[in-house]
Image (cartoon, rainbow, N blue to C red; front, top):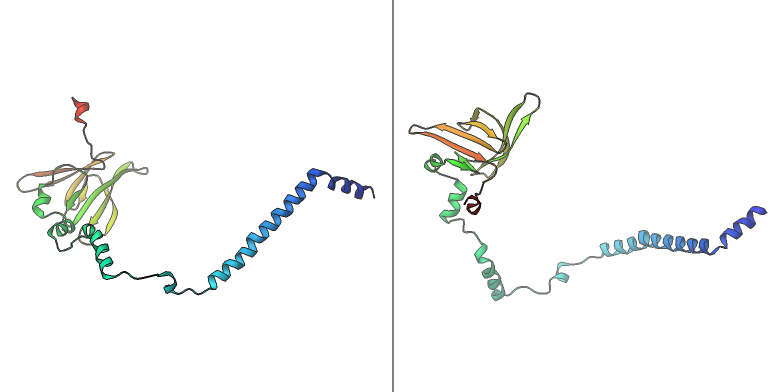
Length: 192
């Protein structure tokens, strides 16, 4: 009997009453959020809407022409020679003229972009990670090349953590290309 009177005293305290009311409100809210709204959402999903409900009207010919004319500057003409040159990459003569520091190099039908230099911890050898993109098929893959090995007939040497040197002995001269991850732009104001 003593316990029941203690429980009644505790339940009659204002803080306990407020806590119980808030708990009850939270339980009702949680129940309605989980079950009542779900039932409504299921009914909405079962409703069949036809496409015509969403389309109020079609464009007439004049509106269609206006819309096409707005996008005309952004449409690429695939028959133009500029687009075909971009797809083909560089000609053999242009590839032979490549030299100096470049961020991308064209070799045959491939475009090479240096993505990183990594050092193998097991044998302490550095390798270059080069993205090779076939310019005809646009297929790109990341390949690993070791220093002092051939990269599509060019001998490659890793210079530092952001550059490799590609060398090829041509009949007239030695072609040397430095493939770099970053193009360095020298600030002329800082030099002067």
